Length: 291
Length: 253
Image (tube, rainbow over all chains, first blue to last red; front, side):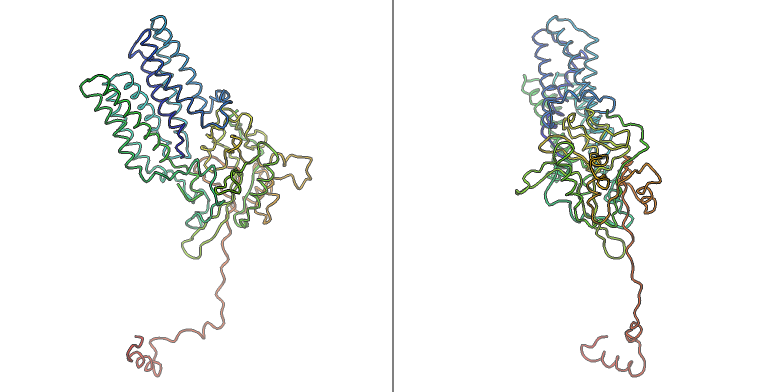
């Protein structure tokens, strides 16, 4: 799959933003006044910034309002509904803390859970794709949720919880990669099933339908950079999980180590998301003899 | 709505004969021609005469080489367009309701004025039947020439998809695959028509007919018995000659 910058930014920063909103809503930290304003502003900047980035890949972003209508069947629509609901609920909760100094506990919890709902619905957009066997697995939503809750814990300075979640996240990610590597072959979709010609013999793509490229090949067949996948996996685990845990556990030395932990984690998650797309293979590639 | 309608009795679709397709791409050209000038946004090209040409097509012809365990490889031309699946995954993923499957005849269409161009339907389609138009930013797909098949302004023989109408080798057939007695259904039953990627669970309406087995020439040669090689374990003069020649320096053993 083509690793579109806008979608990678969205997945990374909205995940962090909604993770922070989750912890704020659940009352893990209860700032008031100006301090609350800054906390909620950071969370909104990440969550909404990511959502805005995600509209850059749309052909007609001005019609985005229509995307709230099909929540009965579409995970993308559910994600939109969930996002608006979560942002409104946490805004009410945040307004209570900023302006009145009161904690509207129930609204906070509802908003916090809805924030996780956004992350879950996002992950299901990918996990539902039968056409991309690597994604169609429980590890996809599990990874999205762990990263979001862990990243939120890191941003909100909860060292203990963040460290535990990062260790779980790292292990989960390694499992997702290793188990995902064989999932395309295990899916049973082959050039033979794609063409229905397997009863004659081994199928090979002889000539593509055109000499140039096309939308399908640009969007679904991404082979550039996959050869570096193993190195990138090691870099991802190091940046996203190992280094942040080390930085967090170092004796407190002002803001420098927490800041390094956040920067390292963000860089790691960006790489992780890039790999999530670049390594995912769509079955349509089989018609082109590629994956 | 992107909820799929209950299966319709009428299932309009195509039957593509991989035995007779000659790979001329006439269906590709006629499809692009008709669908650029009629229903919906035109099918744009980018740098059509430039260094890196690219464009939107609703129908493309691949060519595959199939190598049997024994004998010569076969070249099979393989036209591919939307299969108008009964369980169309492209429809249910659409967040806006732009993608839909018609309850009356099962044709899968895109309401372009509702399409936000997110591309998710193209992700969900295993067949690569949907392409986002780079100029219009909306999803394009085969309409089964919905503006021809019911069009009473056209002569009756033209009321079929442009690709079917134009195919010079008769490799494309259009009809109601929901009706067991239709010509297309009979063709599928007779020739063993099959689904593409049945394991994806999409239940395609369009069917493909397999290439017929290649003819094999029976061995028939009246001279063959007279041209049999001389037995190597010859006796008498031939046997002596064989041994004598073999014993010469450089002689074949």
